[in-house]
Image (tube, rainbow, N blue to C red):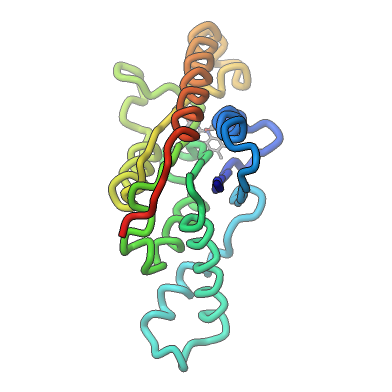
Length: 216
Ligand SMILES: Cc1cc2nc3c(=O)[nH]c(=O)nc-3n(C[C@H](O)[C@H](O)[C@H](O)COP(=O)(O)O)c2cc1C
C-alpha cells in the first residue's frame, strides 16, 4: 500500500494543517505499517512559477519544436501526476491563505491537471482526505461567512473533477492563541480543535480501511 501526502503550509514548524494531517497519517500507518509514504512539500519547495505556462504551451507546438524549458516542464508535470496516480490513497494538508486557494496549491493542481491521465479519470474513486485549516471562523452568522473560497474549490475539484472518494476535515480559528485580538474565542477554538482532531482520527481510520482498485 502507498500513501501520497501533500503539505502546503509556508510555516512548517508551527503548522496546524501538518498536525491535523499527522493524525490522519498515524492511523494510516498503524493499519499499513509497511506502506510507502511519498511526500511533496509545496510550502518549503514551491513549484517554479513558469512551470504551468511551459507545460501548457508545450501542447500547442509539435513535440519536435518544444523548447528545453517546455520539455523539462512536461517531465516535471509527469512526475507530479505519477505521485498521485501511483498512490493507493491521498492525504492533502492545505491551509487557507488570503481567503482563497493559495497560489502554490493552485499551481500544483493546474500542473497535475495537464496530465491527460488525470483529466481522463486516473484518480476516479481514489480514497483521499483533505485536512484544511483556517485562521478565522467562517461559520454561518460570522462576519466572514462565505469568505472561505479555498475549501469549497478544493472539495469541488478533488471530488468532482478528479472523482476521488474524498473525506474532509477542517479546523477553524487556528489564529486564536496567536492573534491576541481573538483571545475572547479561546474556549470556542479549543472545542473546534478537539472536534477536528477527533474527525481527523476518524477519517484516518476510514482512509486506511478503504481498498482502492483503479477504475478502467
Ligand atoms: C499570508 C497569510 C495569509 C493568511 N490568510 C488567511 C485568510 O485569508 N483567512 C484566514 O482565516 N486565515 C488566514 N491566514 C491564517 C492561516 O490560515 C493560519 O495561520 C493557518 O493555521 C496556517 O496554516 P498552518 O498552521 O498549517 O501553517 C493567513 C496566514 C498567512 C501567513
